Length: 361
Image 1 (cartoon, rainbow, N blue to C red):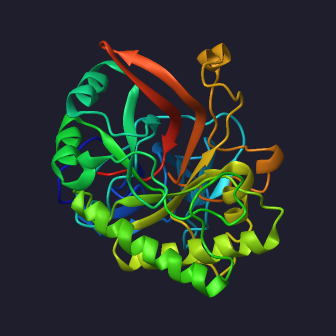
Image 2: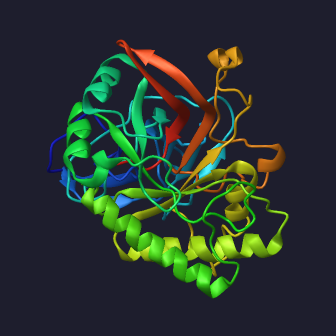
């Protein structure tokens, strides 16, 4: 087969032919037939999976089983050609992801890992980050790299020293750019234009500035940058159209600069407004979404101690965001607003996030 086997792949045998399944570094499922001991080359089965639960032979041919990011068991059968994924009822079986090293397998970046993250107005010191990395439940941190409406200076991000230091500690980052806000926002801020062509130009300019600032901070192309579009009155159709024109240009220009384009916003405004054009070819699609939805307004509410956040299954004002949208490691949920937490004697005021979305590195 070639390459180094990090863990045993799933296989299915039929006579002199063995079919091998593996999850690749890009998160996709791959298969390779081995005929009389001769490998035939890796082929992608499509989709992105979180774990590989084995393979089996039935009377109709090879069936591959996976546990997808929706938590359900899916299957795909080979009958002259792969027939496409179909959901299988019942409780899914989970196992550790399978990793194999080979050129086609390792060509893409590894899928982002899920977990808890936090964001805070001013980037904590390297010492504070070190104390939290070893003692807190968090593995990622949102940092504000720039934008007209950034509330804290974050001078530590003007060079690459801070980023390189905290990455070496094991942190993964969610770069945030707080630029122009919707023209129908209900609090004071610098706002984008209602003129669609002007709004588009502003979105492209913001993407360029964000890319430049990310580079200065040591965040290289390939990383995501999350535009912070605070909640707004999306009953104002003209405002919604201006935001969409702005975000469309943000996505296009960030892609041109080599970065992934993402957005943070209220579930009930910015996110559902993007969901409404998810399949509209006139709008460039965001690479990831980060939605704010707080079950309790006060971050110190004791009910947060037992609250379990969700990334899928949004309802109410968020019903338009279906589970089929941004399904593969493309979501984060800010579920708890500002509150203090202390680890290893270090107290930081944070928002809390459930994260299964692109991060850096």
